[in-house]
Length: 126
Image (cartoon, rainbow, N blue to C red; front, side, top):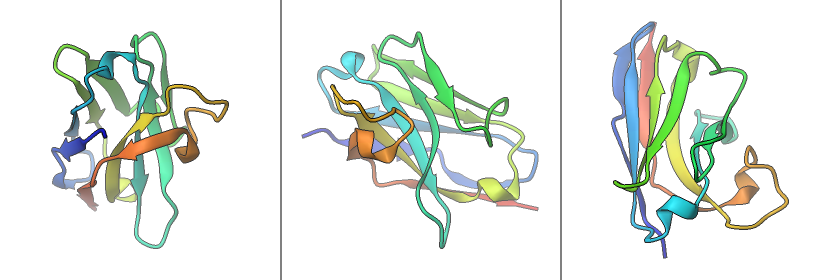
């Protein structure tokens, strides 16, 4: 069983920044791809960003590319999401997730992930 705990959400004005962090209990965290997703009220959960276990590869949704940066610290078992130039449409609950070790499903699809955090609220005011 893997536990993921997000932190860092809050209320920020448009144009501001927030940094989300996710702490993992997985002993082999350094071998897992990790991702961030978000879900706004009345909408489906959507992919935000992902990072490979080695940090060699990162992936971003078009809507956040150039504004958000995903990173990880395998020594601390954490994965972060730095969010800059925030917009009201970024308002959502943000979830950290662990990708299944093996799979043919794209890392940008939620079906690829088997463990999820409880989520942290991000609210961007206009």
